[in-house]
Amino acid sequence: MNRRKFLASTSVASLALPRFAQAAESVTDIGNRRELFIDSALIESLKGSAAQRLHHPVPREVAINHFEDWEGTGSGYHSVFHDGEKYRMYYKAWHIEVEAKGINTGRHPLYCCYAESDDGIHWRKPNLGIVAHKGSKKNNITSAFGITGELKYDPGHPAVFMDENPKAAPDARFKAIFRSWGKRGLIPFKSADGFNWKPMSDEVIFHGLGAFDSQNLAFWDPALGKYRAYWRIFSGGGVTDKEWKPKGHRAIRTAVSDDMLKWTNVRDVAYEDSPSEQLYTNQIKHYHRAPHILIGFPNRYFDRGPSESMSALPDPENRKHRAAASPRYGHALSETLLMASRDGVHFKRWNEAFLRPGIERPGTWHYGAQYMAWHAVETKSTLPGAPNELSVYATEGYWHGKGSTLRRYSLRLDGFVSINGKATGGEVTTTPIKFSGKELEVNFSTSAKGGIRVELQDENGKPIPGYALDDCPQQFGDSIDRVISWKNGADLSKLAGKPIRIRFELKDADLYSYRFIR
Image (cartoon, rainbow, N blue to C red):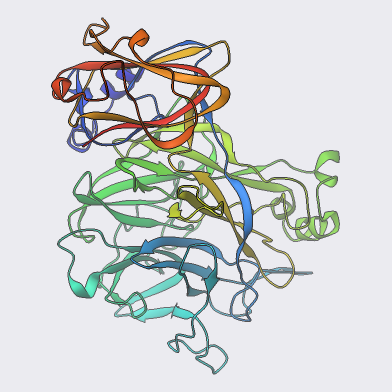
């Protein structure tokens, strides 16, 4: 579907305006914000060999093992964020055991646990002394199944975030969404320190509007100036307080709020040119380097059934054992996708896997693998002298051994998707934009022989004198913040606030993002 027609077909103008100025105007004022190529919102044309290229996280070390007695083989649903000099992690502690009579998950209650790190790479589990497990509080458990008023809450499906709302009260610096038992819905919680939690209401939110059997989440959206929530539904319904008969596909629903208590604009998430698929989680949040763009890492579930190829995958006996308890436990597979949105409802979803199950080895290629943590965080590179990178985290070892693990993966900053030009050359031209600032900065990578050149055009596509392609010396290298210059220099202040187009020429090169600075 054409991008403009896709936007015009939506009925969420009140939500879209802060993100999609172009939906109402022919020129998008990007100011000095960073623009990524994770969607096609500002792409007017691609020529030659130029195409959007999906990149993939690189596996690194195991970030944390869930081998404690109160954790187990089903630990997951991680929330990860940066808080000043500390990185925080919250997660579900849960043990799954396959027995002759079926699946046993009753070894201990579901807990919400906490870990922290100084660098986002090496993690520790502090002794919190809050919740007793088998008579001892020497553990990192922050919350357990509990009752507040007439409501029962389950912190074993946690989504914890640091509230970026500038008006957030000191006793609500941290917030969380816990699942409600009995009365199906969600319960918002608050905390001053991230350890001691209190319910924000004695009523559930979204009652009757979903299934909620996943990591349901909420966060402050700085671009919209409201809270957003995303939660699990089944496309065919069939889930009530008293009955669990889900129909259709696992899907995602969203709403917005000023206070986390009253929610409006309830909508089902829609996709451009993507099939209906089983999406277990959504992991949506604004990208910290470009807050006007929401990025999600949904986990795709696909039951392939028994086959010769299935039998050739790792741990065949364990897989057969799980299938005896329930066929899908042995034959279903999971992996992570990538999607992005500028209005929070309509997403560009990449149908190719962002994080595949990976090279075959014990504990891989099974249901429950590659559930990505919520969300990407910026960390230092492990290469001396290199710029910061993105760290993302994904589960492995589900159903196996003593407990599951969480592995760290790395990605270059803004490195989700690039415009790639082969050695034969390619071009991408933006839609009309306006900017503020005086220099153009790009995040790019080339081969030793390749390079990029940049042309600035007027609104009608005519090269602006002094800023034509032939006025731009070819740039080569691998940098997240290279300033582009022309024969007359890099100063663009005289063009600020005027409608322009940007034409990028790429030869054996990738362009990840751009912005105007200073």
